[in-house]
Length: 250
View 1 (tube, rainbow, N blue to C red):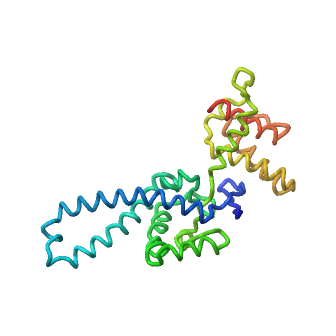
View 2 (cartoon, helix red, strand yellow):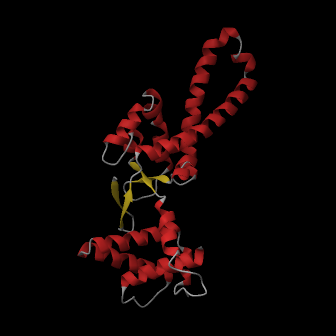
């Protein structure tokens, strides 16, 4: 299992599990079924619109070139738009539980997604998928050429479900647990996973660097929650926020 450490813009380091070739291939299969349907639709529309120009025998060369490029264009456009609009995921990636992230901890930009999509022409089409598979298997961060060019990686996020189930089983309902920080609802599930990751890494590597990360995170959360008095037990405070979030949002 390959992992990667990403330092966020809040100077918090999170460990992610990298998506392997199997996960990426499953996502690719799902996406390919959708792309095939899109291509068929585009083919029918294009044929109907330009029948006189491209269906006649004397234009067979132009017709063949267009019908070769059309699926490639559809494939690239699908991956660019889906990752742009779905925050680093396509429908296939979302189904499998993987997503694209920037290695520098910042948000991926439209140009990053466009570069990734464009490099599919080399990673996927020109090499018949072989180059992309070799790169994912052989590079330290499981990156194909598109990832290297865009400074991105593909990580697993489906552990979210295991995290929520594990913690929900410890809390029966609002009837026997009273949340201490109702404003925690302003955060997202990704925020809670970041908190959980910081707590886990502090437990595993209890040194000055990780304690400073905990202190920084607690100060940031206090500002967002409008808390004046610092908690005596910072780890307990972080765990309480996770509990409150689960109860208030499930």
